[in-house]
Image (cartoon, rainbow, N blue to C red; front, top):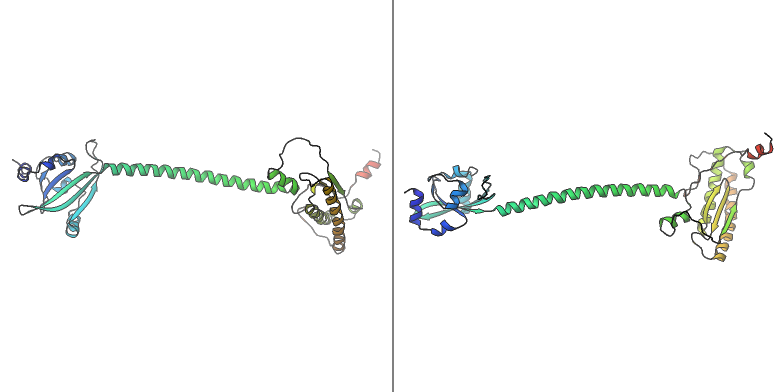
Length: 311
């Protein structure tokens, strides 16, 4: 009868033989196997009695084991057997404790199947990676969306320079659809130009003329905006403004607003005349008013001269 069989019969612990956990007893000093149940034999591949604990569990450090036993009275470790046998758990937790039998000190080892924890960890790790990947993809999409929004915002600002504020606002607020269609409306239309401007173009440099024209158009456009006029276009020094679209306050009120605008424009022109008296030559790289750009040609007009001559 070997030591395992003899101790098993002496201890008479059939419950240990039938439990699902692995159980073993070792000599405390020599760490020699004295007894183990069938589960322990299968899990740790016990071939013969007297196997040493540190040979059975290679990852176990004896110094650490005894230090923890002296300090706490127990020591827990988790191991991965790395076996391909499906009957052997993927993760085993072993609890070591000192015990006595008939005045002899033993070291008990209770091992429990903790595979479910490993499976949960793998599940959590897998889903964490999936979440991280989803977050990365979402971050990329968000970044691209922000970049697209910035491009659209930049384009919108540039486009706003080529549309009157009233038309721009009505389009981008959704009040007006951008469709190729015509509508019949009663509008009040305003035209104005600078008296003698054609002759003036022959006496001034293009840069100085552009500066003068920009200051004039800027003042007139600001007046038009205050009265709700829609700035249609600049034609050289000429300005075309209409009332009643995209917003109308009624025919009479639109006409009255147009007249009030014209009166204030005349007052603003007096201010500009005083300013222009002391104006010197200066260069300006961008032509147009600060909130609207109109592409046009500025300079001497030879068209009438050519028209009077026969080719």
